[in-house]
Image 1 (spheres, rainbow, N blue to C red):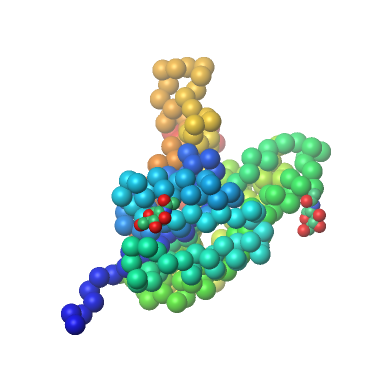
Image 2: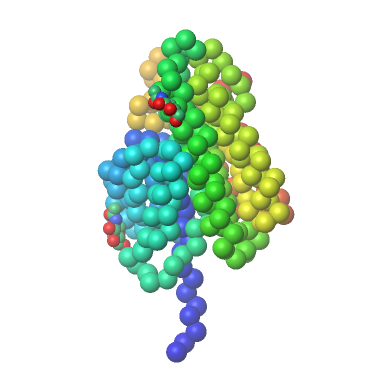
Length: 261
Ligand SMILES: *[C@@H]1O[C@H](CO)[C@@H](O)[C@H](O)[C@H]1NC(C)=O
Ligand SMILES: *[C@@H]1O[C@H](CO)[C@@H](O)[C@H](O)[C@H]1NC(C)=O
C-alpha cells in the first residue's frame, strides 16, 4: 500500500455570524477559500446551514452547528458535536487549527435602561460562552502536533471599542467586552508556552454590512473610508492565523481611515 501522503484539510471553527453579512461570515468564506473546512456555530441552525451551503456551493466545505444560546453548557456541547462530526468528503479526521469567537449583541443603551436580561446576554456572549469555547479550543489544540508555523492552534476573539473604553451607552457591552479581553490576555500568557496562539482584535468603528451601508448623507463618500469592511477584518484574522510562533500578535486594533479616535 502506498504511504498516505494526503493531509486532511484543517478545520476553522467560527462562533457568531450575525445575519450572514458581517465579520464571522466573511471569515468563514475567506478561511474556506484558503483550504480550511469551516464549522459554523450560530444561534439558530438555519443561519448556520444557509452560510454552510453557500460555502459548499462555491467550492468550499462547511457545516453548520446551531445552538439555542451561548451559555457555558451549550457551547461545551456544540463543540463536542463538531469534534465528532464526520466530514463527508473524507474518512480522515482533520485537526481543528483555528477558532474564532465573534459574537456580539447590540446592547447599546443608557445604564438605567439595561435590564437583567441585557446583562445576562452580554455576559453570556462575552464571558460565559467564550470561557467554554476557549476551554474546548485549548484542550483540542493540545492534541495537535505543532504545524509548519510552530503552532498547535490559533484562538481569536473579536473585541470592540468597548473592550478598553466605557461610554455613556455601553455599560452592558463594555462589562462583557472588558471581560473577553481579560480572558484572551490571560490565555495568551498561560498557553503561549504550549505554542497555542491567542489573539484579540479591537474592532474600533462601524462595520459595513447590509444593515449599515453607504453614508446616506454623502453618496459620494467611499464607505471604506468610514466603515470597516468585514472582508478586510477577515484578512486580518487570516494574517493572525498565519503568523508563526517567533513573532506573533496578542492584540490588534483595526479602524477605518477616517475614524475619529
Ligand atoms: C456541504 O457539502 C457536503 C458534501 O461535501 C454535504 O454532505 C453537506 O450536507 C453540505 N452542507 C450543507 C449545509 O449544504
Ligand atoms: C440571569 O441569569 C441569572 C443567573 O444565571 C438567572 O438566575 C436569572 O434568572 C437570569 N435573568 C434573566 C432575566 O434572564
